[in-house]
Image (cartoon, rainbow, N blue to C red; front, top):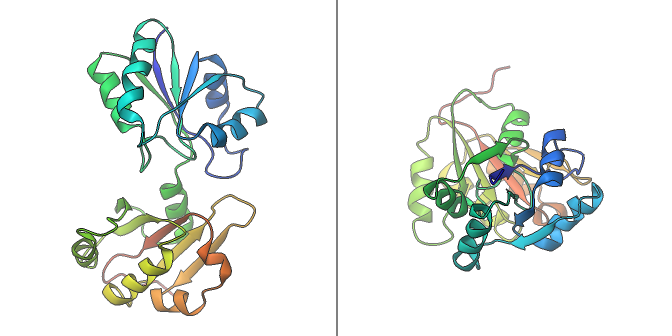
Length: 227
């Protein structure tokens, strides 16, 4: 049956994948992924041999039509990202929206998401939270940080290797007293977690914190940790 499957993949440890995800990747006709080199590592680990089609921010316009045409002709496709759940701060949203518009059945295969994984281990309130993904790099960044400083829910953001120190300095300026949890390379061999105020974490920087992918969880305004 022609269908688009949204398949969650591990965020680090290759064992963090569901049986159903593996079965789906084995059964589809082809797989749309961010980077074929990254996805090949996962597929080779599970001995899955399928055609891979690169779908990323640079080629979405040209590839979406081709992928939809193949699905409409009777083939099934799995959409995966380099890590985690497709469409969550990753390419793929436009393909999913276009598939829905074409009347193609979209079926989710749930699994790991870095934001929720970090929240679950943060020790911060999880009953109400806001996920902001990657903050704007330039335009609107300061305005957004100013608004987040008034947020009364737990905040989750992603940050890259190259901007994590900048983000911590900004948080030290806009939210100096907040407790934050910085998670690096979750589930991977060199997983690290730092807890404290932005300044405390900055003062304890080492070479490790400037390498890898980061999830930053920020406590709500006025929140106080219980003794």
